[in-house]
Image (cartoon, rainbow, N blue to C red; front, side, top):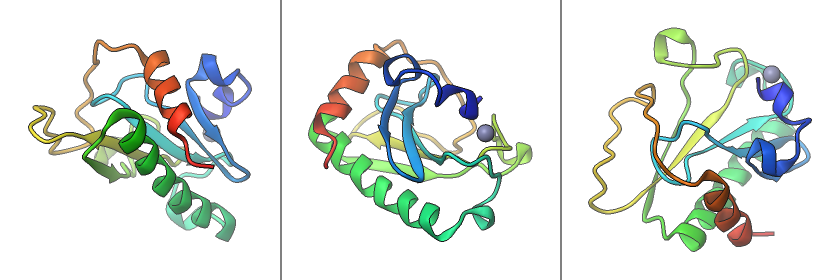
Length: 137
Ligand SMILES: [Zn+2]
């Protein structure tokens, strides 16, 4: 699924940013507004399979994703994590992806486990544009 979406346009795939090693894309089934995933272009399933460039890119993009959602959406905090394996709730377990979920004081979207998927009625394309506009370069 992830390997297919990178051939689509950024708008169609809801891709926020493409780097050299990794890219950032909005989750189609977000836990909350601005729920993104950061992942390597390469089809690898565990953190141990990442090369040095991909590891560095993942953390660097996490920093930029935090800044973009603070500036673009007013996020006040973030949940960050991986679901590794189907038993841990990974919907797509063969292509590693880091979840980044913006949070706000008092939001009711408490998330004990990342696997609890819910569909939010929101305009993903508008959310994407707000994050892209605030994306640090
Ligand atoms: Zn893949």
